Amino acid sequence: MSAIAGIRFGSREIKDLLIAWVALGVAFALFFAGGAAGVQRGGFLPLLLISMLTAGVGFLLHELAHKVVAVNFGQQAAFRADYGMLGLAVLSAMAGFIFAAPGAVYHRGRITKRENGLIAVAGPVTNLALAVLFAPLLLVPVEFVFRLGLYGVGINLLLAAFNMIPFGPLDGKTVLSWSLPAFLLAFGVSVGLAVGTAAFFFL
Image 1 (cartoon, rainbow, N blue to C red):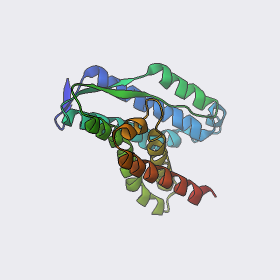
Image 2: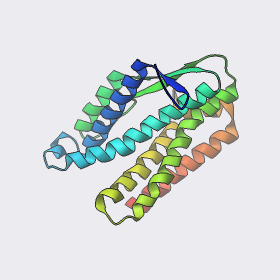
Image 3: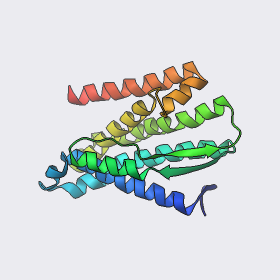
Image 4: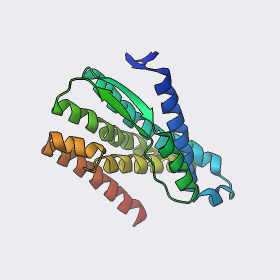
């Protein structure tokens, strides 16, 4: 058992987080390269580093945000990787598209609907904050740094918007069941920024 800033992590949890981080980094790097065929064209290592620092970190901190808030509410919480879905993410990326559902933070203990909603919204809010932190890199006239900023902003906004969809196990459904105003605010900001950024760079 290890502890970081007072938050405890079991050995299995640390292993799951690291494996999920690496698997997502590889999957997104393959996706950025255009699939397995694109790797043969070279330049894969810079893409791997970029994806580890953007998609990997975005996912990692999203899940850790859920855990931190849950623990602060007195919950027992731990991340568990879904190895089958991680494998699917890598395989789909090799084919040129990506489908990633790497796992989730599971928590238990007595909890109110409000606390559960705050635990859920913590992940997307963290991704929005990361997008803001990556944004200044877009002003740096160095290709690697600019691409780091571009992918960092884009992926984190996408993660925030996707997770706020009020469907199935996604965060948006939990937030909506707690508070309609909180859901509309988080959903509106996440989707609005994601769509606006995509339109600015690609239209």
